[in-house]
Length: 625
Image 1 (spheres, one colour):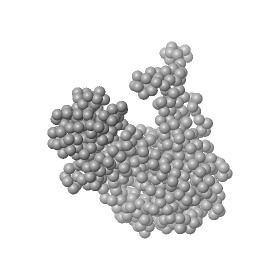
Image 2 (cartoon, rainbow, N blue to C red):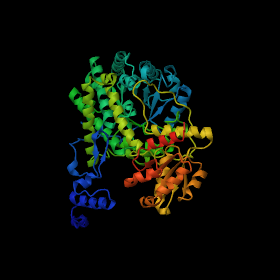
Image 3 (cartoon, one colour):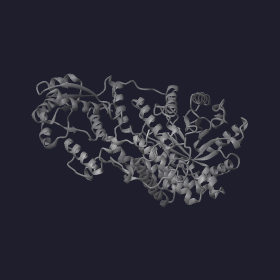
Image 4 (cartoon, one colour):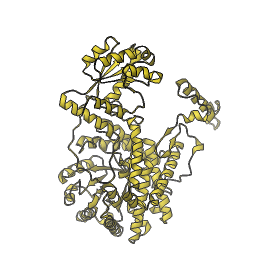
């Protein structure tokens, strides 16, 4: 085969497309859909998506949007990974979390997980977990020289660490060969509890523990920089990164002040981040985190060999739902994939029922197998930085890093992480971010499948044994489904008391083609609040009788705008005369609002309306407790 014959002349026969040509195509689509008459860059801008932290996602990225050089895997600034080989040799660490107060039951779960695919153990110890004295029983039968142990002991981190180190020695594993994470995180504990009365003592104890690890167990990390409290309080990706950066800097100051070298101090930290179902944002967050920490390490004089950030990614609890929890399997799959692609060293996929209580064996198995499929069948770990080189990902990584650095500077300006927690600055910023996101959730601009979109009222609930109550008193713990969960709980109480759910009549009128879409919209909307839809086709003469026989106490008019102009007033009046406590119209009222309201329409429901307010007021009208 000659060199000439290997060329592909087909592509050369077509002219290169430019951005202006693409924008003209966008203009045509938007004009036909009635979205906008904008042209050029304005038409492209109409397709952009605004994220938190002032980040805007454009619909098209090219080489012109490339960020600054990101280096190579395993070298500063570590955007492309903390080691040259990435996870290609052995895959990432599959780390399962265990929340049990009974050491025997914890041991059964730990052994089952290790025998079926996990590679390390994340164990809650002390308050809310197994007692420190029960750690030996919880780890009975675990080969400590093969399976790293990660402790989450809260205020009991010092005695728990001592007990784990004792177990290594007792099992014949030299401390110099041990691999573990002792989980000391005094600032994370302050964020969780709001109690700073022992902070100084805890920081000193953590520093002593780190000193012992450096001297006796170099494979053991004493401190964890846990960013989950900030994510779980409603913080954005940049706020999570900024808070973790401030925490890491505070620990570096503490450790070096206690006499450790800056390289040794860096090696004593492991960072923990949330992985969400927002695939690209999670990938960019983990890459940006390594870049940011590399900058801190550079300023502090850390050697390149010690400045790579060790990362543990955990699927987000904020995104987990209590209703239709099976959908959580999809969310955690995307989050686990994102964590692996983003370069996390260890990944925890929470079981799909984690929001309901203590996970059962089936849920833990699904969580394990999710990672097994990603590693062994999808081979995600076999490629170093698979997102690297994507103009979109590189640009998003850069923007996120800059936003996080700005927030980190705000925290440092407030006196550091401890001061920002004490004075409420951090809590206020997170609360403001969550308030803005809650507005999007309420208006279903951020839909929750199975909860605010496509809810299934007849689905049998999934019951689990209650989990130990987490420590509280500090930053709140939020979930995306909180507002809808409160509505559904009111509906459940009504069902338990009366034998029926509150009902709404969806009164479709006019041709079937005219009302089908809005009937489906209204059914979806009201079921999100636990209100059962009763769908009927009516006209002005039959509406009153249909309503009386429906068992509903409120009604929604459903048809097209054209049919509304002809029949809505008469149908609304008939429903009101039949005793409807509230009559809604599906769609925006436009210029006929006063006419509709005069006929008895009380409110209007449409895409983008405040669904939580609509549903809450509907339950109030029906006096559903």
